[in-house]
Amino acid sequence: MHERHHRNDHHHSRRFARSDHDQHEGEGRRGGHHREGRSPFGRGGHSRRRMFDQGDLRFVILKLIAEKPRYGYEIIKAIEDGVSGAYSPSPGVIYPTLTLLEELGYATVAESGGKKLHTITPEGESVLEANRPAVDAIFQRMEAAGAAGADGRSPQILRAIENFKMALRLRLSRGPLTEGQIQAVVNALDDAARNVERA
Image (tube, rainbow, N blue to C red):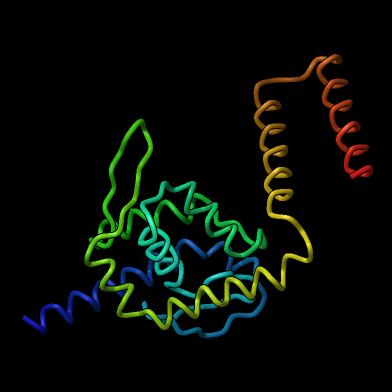
């Protein structure tokens, strides 16, 4: 029985490692040189621009949903707040990770109103506790990264900027603006700039 359990854990670790490489492949391209990094879920490439080593994000999410059940967007916000706005994981990374945790039996999902609430399982809690030193180290690095990379920038301001960009992209995707609409947007931007200067 012990041997079978050991094989299952090894199989899960390999699946975590493969998934992590796929999800961060784009980040790796943007980074500079690669080096080998250690992770409780295996070894893999590490970019100097990458926030998490291979497998780290699984531990981060497990810890967050161990604190309380969370929706996907709440996990994204919690990670962003944890690094003081210096990094924000994309939904394309978070949601596949949540699916993987569910498949491995480390999390359960309850759907309500089209939203999925993620809760840690006893198996997930066991994995989290067995790797407590590594998990603590990850969150310490996140805090340090936030302190080093924030440069005085407010996470609330960064979110507001991204919200504006998204609103503008969504509006433009609906079709061309009229002259009146263009002027309204320009006026709003000019007013915002003046208010920021006076703040």
